[in-house]
Length: 623
Image (cartoon, rainbow, N blue to C red; front, side, top):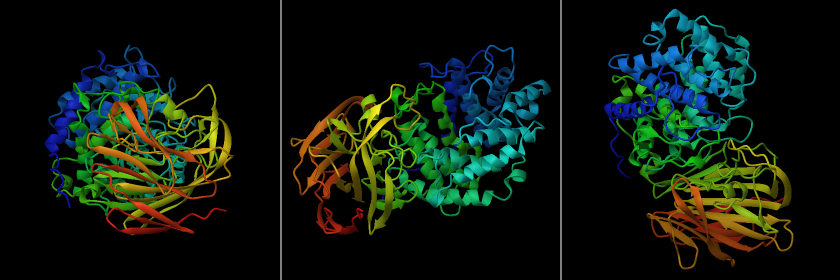
């Protein structure tokens, strides 16, 4: 068992938060109603950029004000109070974009309402009557507005209306009832939630769909609306966190999967929310340490550039963002610092630290809702993905590299260049038909589980090519176009430590079809002599055929990864053997790759791992 690094003190947390705040506040407009850090204009324009910058830093300022009970933070109270007066002044040149003027204002309004409630004695109660009236008028268009997307956005309408109700403004009981019912409809097995009707499992589960119910329940008057639901919300959060804590690498990196990764250490938010809600299954020290490892991971990698959050991961890399993201967008990372809303005398700050599962050693875990077989080896967390694609069941779309790859980890990023959105390569199994690679979105989850100390998962899909349409919108889902089905593909993952044995069977492929496996992508890599592995900065990615002949090579992509300018993927390619199981050994390790082997006997596969241990797994039945 490894020893976990010492956690930050509360003073360390506050110092980091104050760096984030001071860096952003330096770019406030004259009336302080907008904060627009330097950077390229977002897809929604500079006016929205400025509103985002204010609202998202107001989150962090609110946590600081509430956690200090208003003492010693007069500069924050004054600054953001000035910004509120300006923001709702219809004559101010730096006023806020209104909810009826642009939909993005509906998102930011929720942060404004949440913090106005959280800091009520120090900001709202001290605002003059005209400003209070204008704030109510600014938020009021949320009432009865049915254009909010049926996703985590439901909480933006609900939070705003709860605040309006508490200050004598308009609100709709029907809206509240509908929003709570919609939230409940997203519930899935094990406390997980899907962000909408698609198979959308990502960081939004934690930093939105579990965060807002806990914070909302603490808003003024919310208990009168909750109808006793809070206990169930906390129970779902508790179950989710038992999985989520296994998805953080020993170095503190979150899983690099899903959209909005520019929010970075917002991934720490659900652990703080667990501490706020006092979930029973994880200790306050374990939750604080998980949050600490995530935030300090980014701090250690120099995420603050002159005390500013850029668009990127460790450093600026614009392709990681959605097209609408502007320089204020990354400040939703503030959610990961919500622990500062807990005062210095809260028990969480004195609780003994407990290491992350990945810091303790190797593990295997299955997460049913997203269809993830999870393993840890060398401190890296990996998932074999058999159920998440940000698509609806049966919809044949292109694979989103953020969701539909067969594997994700805390040490590698999917390839996110234009080609990566149109052609699966890394962590994929693709058929090559007429020179075009197939996609797997709308796969069918067969199941995930554990057998001994191995995690297993399987899925099947109609491998299809896509003739892409001209107009494409990228908000996370795969690109769309006309689909042509090539064959049925079934995959089975048997994962343990640094290894995954990936078994694949193809049924009904046309003559001449080839099959291509892609391994883990590594940046700045050197290539092994046989082309089967790439190595960089102590990390090695290797893919090796088990019991059949395949061509080995390395594919290179330029400016496709937030980790560096040159990414390399080890690849295997071979003719399709119809209705026959083929297996490859896929390795991601900080050490020297050892060899595993597999024996396929009828309806089962037995893997012999490098240490001599064995795992026998029944293979999926093919109709």
